[in-house]
Length: 128
Image (cartoon, rainbow, N blue to C red):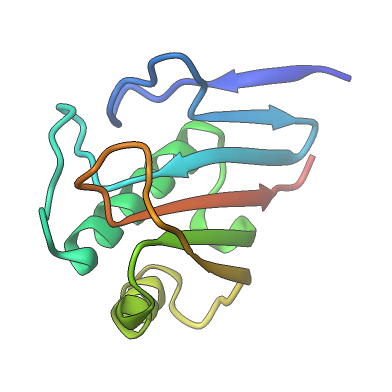
């Protein structure tokens, strides 16, 4: 089964991992975070700003794979503070509109960098 690495140039550099893989018509995205294309954290201490950047990164990775947000069938959101869930849902609605993929929300003690507040993984399915 052929696998294609998705390496967009308009998101931060992936070091030691791939931003996504396309396997036939399914796209598996690595967790996206509040890091802009130049590699800088955005929204320190602001989960909504970080979440917005994570979803912008997801859009860009999907576009590089020939997909859109409406092709997303599953997301997993990892975040540090359960009290941020309402803000996270607002940002998610902004990016998905009335398209609601299956979603899992998981509170975690920490993420890969100390200042990260949220990370979002996604799976998308496109026409072959």
